[in-house]
Amino acid sequence: MAAPLSLHHIKPPLSSYNSPLRNPNLAAAAAAAAAVTASTTSITTNNKASNNNPIGAHTCLALLEKCSDMSQLKQIHAQMLRTGLFFDAFTAAKIIAFCALDGDNGSLPYARLVFAQIPNPTTYTCNSIIRGYTNRDWPLEAILFYREMISNGFEPDRFTFPSLFKSCGDLREGKQLHYEHQDMTKDIQGEYLNQHLDFL
Image (cartoon, rainbow, N blue to C red; front, side, top):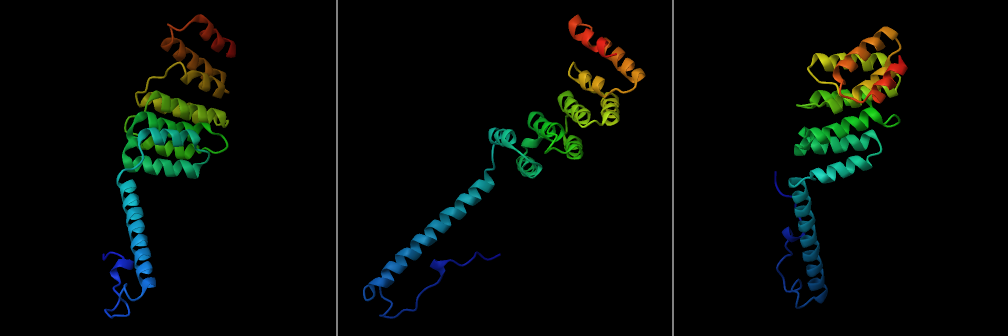
């Protein structure tokens, strides 16, 4: 593709009238045209440089902290995919947490799509999705996602179970989760465990 024409590509006809010495206005116009061409070139160069050097990890994280809706989040997500930052577990977890936990502006289906793209998801990302389902009063989805999490080899932690207990409407399901929770948290203080026993 040919480069776009700018003012410096257009040459005035050679005549004595167009000589800068004869026409001082022409000299001023030529200087202005040269300045416009130089500033256009520097803007284009700066844009190309910014496209070649996309935003860094700290900038992405700062943008995620200030993100207020899904359209902004999708732009940040696209930039992270473009730069490879998305494949960092921490930054990907931040996207999932926004989608799953921001009740007014988030989107659990989008969180699940993002979760499917992560090469190495963590228990933290799973907990964010479970908590998102629980906060939106979708208890069955929270429990099904927990079962999927376990079948895929993720180890639940002490943050996994509170959301699940909140989701349990069926006492039998709650008891089963309680037994699983007991097996995994034998080293946790009795006070924490008693909170869950009181729930049942």
